[in-house]
Image (cartoon, rainbow, N blue to C red; front, side, top):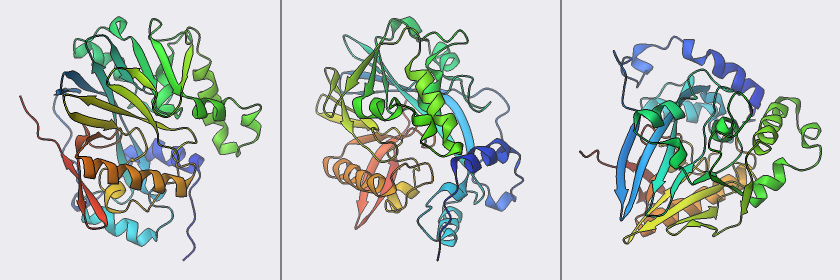
Length: 321
């Protein structure tokens, strides 16, 4: 069967109206909307490192962008089996704040007010969690897609965290900053290029360009995880004999990326590389019993990888108080 890959324009257009989709009750996995405010941060530890997951909000995209190299009926059946709507997918935005003895590291800066209305909550949720933005010493950006970097600047186009050291993958920087890229991509991709370039060129930001294995601070290093974007990087934490990988968008779905790592999405720049990277990460995390944090997994997105033959499952971490 011939598979039609939806464009990013289609994804953004449909995403804008996705919250209004009327889905049958039997098709919805979501519970009813809360009657009041929900906590938007989650704290835990990894060895001697203090970690906080902070939400930037959520957005919805059409599920036609999932598993674009698979039979659409198989994708629909998979979503239905997992009690997920077959029309519009729900993406959380889980940011990791890392506190060591010597540094406070924020992974990704969210969308700001330049993307969907349901995102851009990071700074407010940081304040609610009692975190002083001026305490952040390092900002790591996994890749330059809107929901990960567009929140880098305020309404005056100045850096939100002016005192921090900013880190981005060298290959990621090279891709987005190549000469006249905006005129080399499809029209529907031009807004992504312009947004990435404007964010990278933000006033008050000087980039430390990283390669595979780059140590941000002791216990926090970056690894190459390309595919979703050409220079995508993930963050590996190690402390007290424990490890965690902040996956960024190397795995975007808490169920599909594990059960069908061979399926890639319409937003993945290089599908085959995305699949190879994902399989490598799943093998590593399962074998070494590493914890993982998925940026788009259901909040707070923390858990482990369990191998089941050639497949994997995401096992959410237990909530503790």
